[in-house]
Image (cartoon, rainbow, N blue to C red; front, top):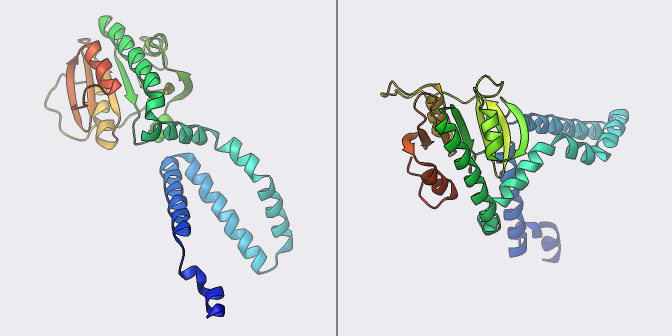
Length: 257
């Protein structure tokens, strides 16, 4: 019995083993979700190929390749921190958005909502077209990569400057993640659904398109009318006041759009 237990004891794990397995599985899943749709997933696949090659080299005793890969892996941690720096920032930002930590970031979220609402109020008054995508649970990494990276703190002045007519970035979307504008001039997917309202332009169609594919809140300021609209879950609602937009972004009003 003792011999059997020593050899096959792993087949009867204790509760701590099961807890560790569950924690590791959740962490691996969350990492893959964060990396999906980014260039980092391609790098991860390349690294997996190197690990597989190392295994083959050890198996058939290719000593030179084994030595070179061991040297590479020895310094790989530092290289990974440099290469995956944007993804690590994103992962930490998402961790801060977890329900366990939302109480700590509520004040920060209120400030972001205030800055976006203030910017939209000025843009609406001047009839300056704008589209601002606020990332929520589903990452917008693939759309961030289509624009110009900024990683600048959200501010009304910066948003207004981004959408200044004839500037290089005013035609695309600004993407907000946490308290940062992570990119501007980003290209969003146009909705494939029929749009009955002929007055809706490209910005509104792009806002609808993104809201159909993600859970982002997408704010649009019309260049023609100055109306503030919001797209969410494939629906577009128009005619928000700055105060209504501010409350909605704060989460004080359910996002029914």
